[in-house]
Structure formats: C-alpha cells, structure tokens
Length: 170
Image (tube, rainbow, N blue to C red; front, side, top):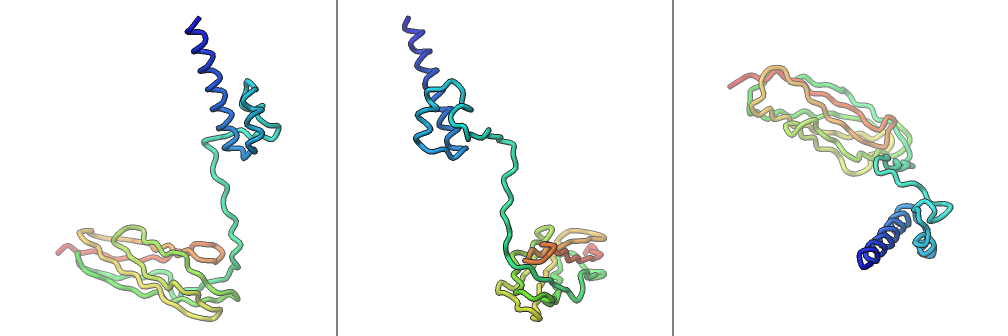
C-alpha cells in the first residue's frame, strides 16, 4: 500500500512539473497553472497552450534600421609574393552612396590571420571611410585567399572583401 501512495505522489509531482513547463514556454498566466495541474495532459493546460518544439529555430529579429548603400573603391586586393611571418596592410576605402547614415556593425576576418579595423561612428550620406585589414600569414605557404565580411545597415547586410597573396617560405 505504501508503494502505491509513493507512486501516486510521484505522478502528481510529475504532472505539476509538466504543467509548469508548459506555462513557462507558452507564456500562460499563473492562474492557468492551477487548472493545468488538475488535468492529465500538459496540452490541456490552456486552450492557447502551444506545443514546445526544442528543435524549432528562434524567431529572427526584425531589423528596422534604415537601409543605405556602400561602395568600395575595390573589393579585392592581391599582395602578390610575400614572406611568411610578415605583416601586410591594406586599406579598403568606401563611400556611403545611400541617403541614410551608414552604421557598420562588424567586420570579421575569415581567420585569425586576417584582422580588420573599421570605423565605429556613423558615416553620413556621401561620406567616406576606411577599413584597414592586416594580414599576417604566419607559417602559411603558397596561394592564400582570405575574406573580410562587413556587416552594416545595407542591402544586402553583408559585403565581402577579399585579399590574396602568394606566401613564400623563409
């Protein structure tokens, strides 16, 4: 008899935990939780209860930032032949060719050997700016191609810059 009571209490606790989980993920009010505890299925917790899908992708945030356009003087640079362990800098010059201020959110190199530096302040319409890219090949050898992804309030949101080099062993 004692075992049946323990099993019954565990079942009640399990149902209560499921009801609280449904409440947590569906946004129901606390008053709905008490009615959910009395039911035998979590979906009956509320007529508005949604099914939680742990594999569902999160909703994408809406970007209401005014869009502009960006034009680079060049999108690709070839350093030619360079030596291992050298430091190679290239400045990519751009113009905000749109009618809204240009906001650069990020500039990311394709690997740790390619480090971009970009302006953090807004670039006004018609204004210009620079993204400095430093490429340190380390012990890389032969033909190399690296990219810098510029993320801004442009359409498309990402712009790719490319650097190339033939790295010679020292």
